[in-house]
Image (cartoon, rainbow, N blue to C red; front, side, top):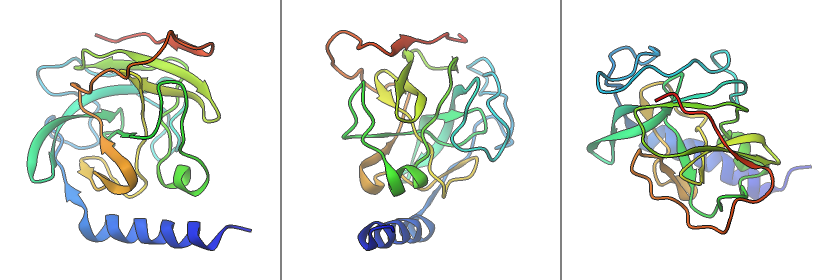
Length: 184
């Protein structure tokens, strides 16, 4: 049986995202296009459209988006979905579980690639499987988003991931954390 507070919080989160969402545009034109903006190389494709979490080879690339009324360069997956990080996470551990993980599916891949971002992609073996991290920040999508649309900025301590995201300061990489291939 689910806890009533989790259900109420989940419904409230979905309603807040639907009502107060922010629209974004992908700089490459078509939101579903795998082509990256002119300044970046195309990313490899991820799992089939509509699959969550993404498994297999996940592509992380950059796109232009309207975030909080300001156009920013953000990280998106190969389907064009905005990527987020959860502030309480550490470089080695996700604190996103249960109903929250259902709303914020982790980006997972054993061999992620990146285009247009100079940060470091890693894979953290955790409860979600092979979760992708950018500069030590574990990455997630949001179920209310669509390609080219940002609706989760600042919701429940999730924030849009950008190429300039600072590296999480941590001790040496724990067992289970391995560098990932880059598609630069």
